[in-house]
Length: 341
Ligand code: DOR
Ligand code: ZN
Image 1 (tube, helix red, strand yellow):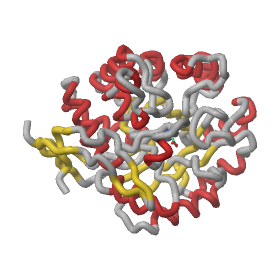
Image 2 (cartoon, protein in one colour):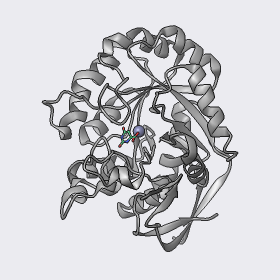
Image 3 (cartoon, protein in one colour):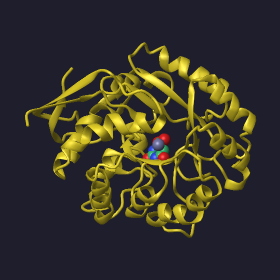
Image 4 (spheres, protein in one colour):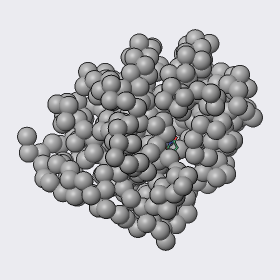
């Protein structure tokens, strides 16, 4: 196969940040995707509808073709009333749960899930999705076990309590998560990043630490990577594209305490194509990238298409990022598919 035309994909999990870097982050995403679900972990976080409206205005001011779908950052204080306001705004499409301390800018996240029951009950009533960063944060739980711990201790019980809650288990990284989602009701879906399909913890750690492969949840062992590959290869409608592209300047990544996050937006669909071809599932790419997400969210599929052409090209080794430099995911690597401009 020399070219592949698919319905224009959407990115169902994306960090664009704010300020001067938006020129880069919004344009990079708009070059590939029609819509994106914009994560709210700014500092300060996007905790109410007015902040989401203002943030969307700053994104729209970039005058790109990207449709920004906004999210609210769930806190212990988020009221059912605020959820209703967000829903009524028409621009907030989902609410993001960060366990406090789990990841970048999660300090204001949820300390005890019980504190959010009123807000979650309202989400369930409205059919508005809860997007979950699924990791427990107790210091005695090993970082590689935090996703499984979250399923057992938090997500399983939560979905039993709210069986009609629409829920996306974001950036899943383990066989346990893939199995949990496959076995769950149709109210439950999951996003999978390019890095968790392409790499495992050996890529992160063997031969030296690769800070640009460090993200959260952290890359797991190869058997988990294979389970994610099997999940998307099986063609289930429950799994869809969410890059979790999370830009940090080069200096913040290559540091004594490096930030978590991979900047995949500039080559996102090409990285997914590379991954899918490597496990012989290119025929499943379109549903994963362009159909399953909008179907889950109850939104129309995009009407445009994009074309990927087989051609070797090298991912740039660095890019400008405001006044700074950023190293994209796959920097310097040769990819086999390129999106036609
Ligand atoms: O690696 C990550 N980076 N994981 C997250 O959950 C947050 C993200 C970020 O915002 O940098
Ligand atoms: Zn994220």
